[in-house]
Image (cartoon, rainbow, N blue to C red; front, top):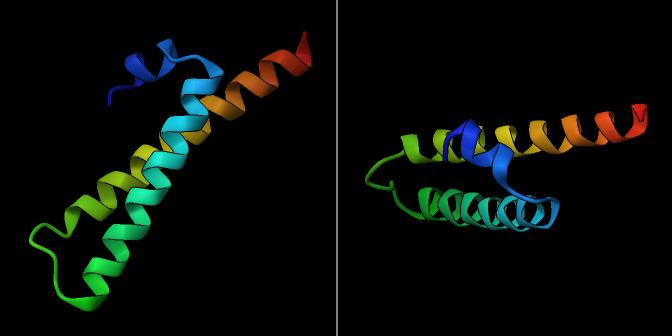
Length: 67
């Protein structure tokens, strides 16, 4: 998901997407701990996606606090 797509999401959609990505990260970590997953770089990609979502949520909170 690109940053332009993240910006277009509503606050509820951001929260839902964040929880979905966190769940996916947990599953990937467990799968990788049990046996090596086929593409371990997916873990890094999911972590970066979570960071992007958190950044947008924080940016929106800061904007609403300053208004």
